[in-house]
Length: 507
Image (cartoon, rainbow, N blue to C red; front, side, top):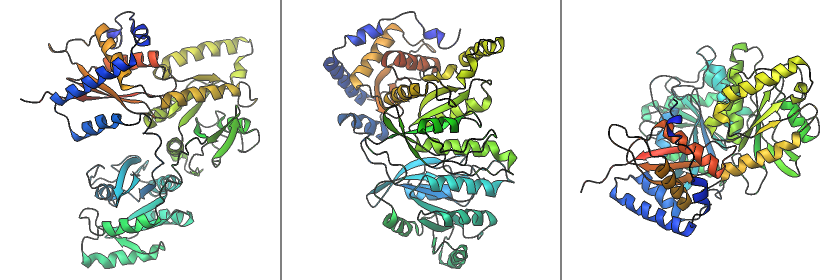
């Protein structure tokens, strides 16, 4: 018996009960449950979370996109230490081992009443030999996705070949770049910082991320050029929704974009990986404008065979950061591969909405034995390999002929509506109460954890927080998620459920 089967408990009347719910009464009950949390040990974050729901239900989505500052540089120059210093709190992992920060991490920061998003780009190096190339590639993505670049160099080491590789790229960008000479702990080390003028990026800013020296002056200068609203992360209210078309090489991504756009915008070649990333495209599909986002302009280094997968995943991650919904294209004429599953996992990790497009479907329409076998195997593969994303809308298309392309629009709209969906606090707590009444959590060590209160902390993706008296089994949490989907929809979006185990205050 699997963990989830343990909580099946047979049919219940949840849908019927929630359909007849008195929403005003449900809100009053939820307010009572929330008030009863005063008897428990809560921290500041809990208080902020609970406070947030006294305001406008949609207040979370109408704020303009914050400007983005990206911190780039080779491993071990002190990027994460600088992140912590700017934030004024210890958030980023700091270790003496190069490349501890494995990928791009985002934080919210504030300086002189200006709020911004800070991106710590980390190491991302596939191996030691390719380190300068990978740092340059990582910088390329960061530049694409930010408004201001802070390029960190270890002043005590001086400029290395890797630093110079990044500088070449920074010089061609039209983004403001600040050269940060880190580890200048006192005035005696100022000459080392001055030596970095040779990089040709203008005046070096000497700082000590660890001690805080020079960081305030640096931030004052950065604020002078930082826009009020991000030019890259902006989600114009009511503007075209942003779609990333993802998939392994040669599954038909470019053909799909060309058909959607109604013209030849992307070079299509039988050779896998020939796309030289298109810029963002505004496309009219189904009578509505959509913004198909590019994949951050990473130029595939053809001679770098071993790094091909690394660059592909980098492009995918970058496209996801700019998108709201991902269309993952799968080639039905071939088996679902590990690479396909890795791309889907990247979408899940990014928290974006998801649509699965099964391409080259027209090839399976012939009645010969081979196609009949492939159709049968495909259904089995979908059942086994894609069991964790059964909630994603599926569209069978032919990108080459344009067949069934119009079905993509309702799938995108459904996924985005689910991604944006918010459940009122009263209704969510009524759902939890009815669920627990019909399917109680099993006893664990003679105790039964209780759910005290639940709230939806955010949308995009829908994120729920459960205040509990003990840890809920992973299987029970999955069961809650499954019933949430069955009752409220959430088709096409991942759901996040977080737990906060809280103890009663000592009287």
